[in-house]
Length: 101
Image 1 (spheres, rainbow, N blue to C red):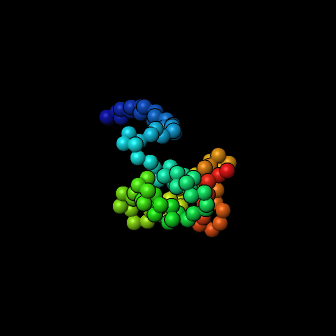
Image 2 (cartoon, rainbow, N blue to C red):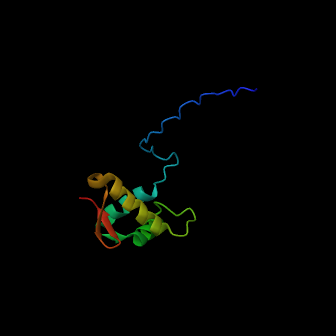
Image 3 (spheres, one colour):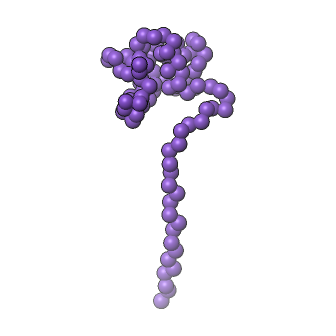
């Protein structure tokens, strides 16, 4: 009768979240570019208007995504939910955001 050899698996490595370092190429992330655009405008904007302003000013361009405005909208909502009072954005109206004062 054959005996079954058991081996213990090493415990899984714990993944911890760290703050993102600046990109080595100096480009802004989509959210950082949105903060910059909102700061310069001083008025509430839709994500579509933010994407257009980012592209015009050269802060950020879509890497070929079909719906960058919806991606930005979702990312802003995630930040609002995750960071709460520490979020950089405030939703002022349906589909419009501004920087937190």
